[in-house]
Image (cartoon, rainbow, N blue to C red; front, side, top):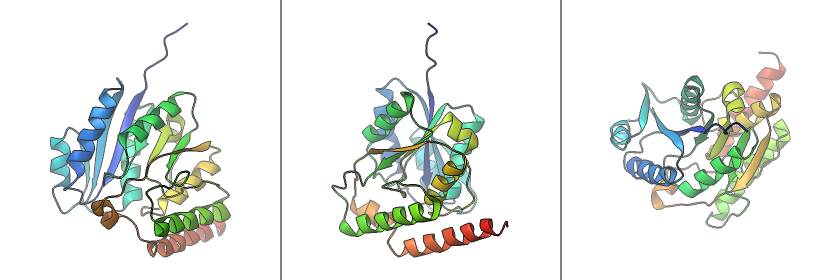
Amino acid sequence: MPKKQQQRVAIVIPAYNEGPVIQKVIKSLRQGLARQNLDFEIIVVDDGSKDDTAEKAAAAGARVICHIMNVGTGGATATGLGYAQQNNFTMAATLDADGQHDPQDIIKGIQLMSKDGPDLLIGSRLIDAEGMSKVKILGNWGLSTITRLMFGVRVTDSQSGLRIFSQNALENLRWKTSGYEFCSEMLWRARQQDLSIKEYPIKAIYTDYSKAKGQNNWNGVNILKSLLRRRIMELLGE
């Protein structure tokens, strides 16, 4: 039998003004992934940061792609995944730059994807919500409900930044929004492309830093407005 091809994994981290923590995040990832004997590259997309995010990420060993101006996490994620697709990676993972994701959860997702996984695998903090505040649980539940009602995609954590992409998803999955609303739009586009979507449980790690950097529930109103506008535009053929 032919030997199974080793996966080439791109780890994509969209980052905006994450200088205080980005080196720690990268070093922790590198240590965990190296122990798995994975062929990987960490790509930090510096989304127009005003601090030293890019310099610190490069010093920690990441490949850094810089946006001249801030376009939003959806645009930064698209840039990183575009790099992965253009450079023939067989899989990609995205995660938040503020340290809220455990490297072991990323490794678990890569392993699940490697075993004939779906096209898109989402790390859900809501399957086991221990560590999440009631406010965040409510906000995520609300946006996941909106995603189901508007786009017919049923997931528990539509806003999770930890996602694993198959090569098929890298080649075919695209979206048009550039802010946080891209999380829900991505699921919509995956459904349009008949890509398979699954979830797996991950831990929610919140520090004072990540709490200050994260979304608040009021931002959900802006996300809803953007998604509705996008949905209406497409229904009208624009």
